[in-house]
Length: 189
Image (cartoon, rainbow, N blue to C red; front, top):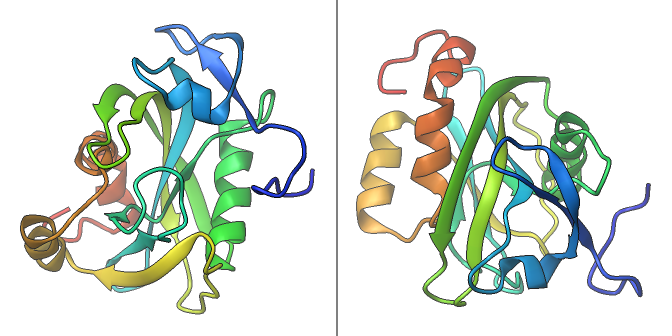
């Protein structure tokens, strides 16, 4: 399936789900995020280099939601009927210009986070993935403004000093047990 962009004539649709993550319908992407938000399927990816540093991305200023903030390696929404694992792999390659070397499931988490800047709501049943990525990235500037590989200590400093997505700590905390496996128990994760 070709990537869908803002220039795509047809609206981007998301899978609506119930509290157990079962599909119950679809909704247009922006409308699903308008208050009070509609529970929908999403994914979040945490990728690490061989030194155990996490790859963060700063979202492009043109993003409709949470522009200019730091967040996990990649996040998004599967197309209706698309497996979350495949969506995570696809979007990582589309956004960062590099596919994960290793990607594995790290559970799910359900949350509701408002984005104070846009007024939109993240009401998500989020599938978590973690893995490894090489150093050669070619970020799409329409998606990613900046990237950084960070240690746990640097992440703590950045988080205390900077602006991160509303969902970042929720998804990271939920993925931590598998993050520790993937990073070989790197201290701090």
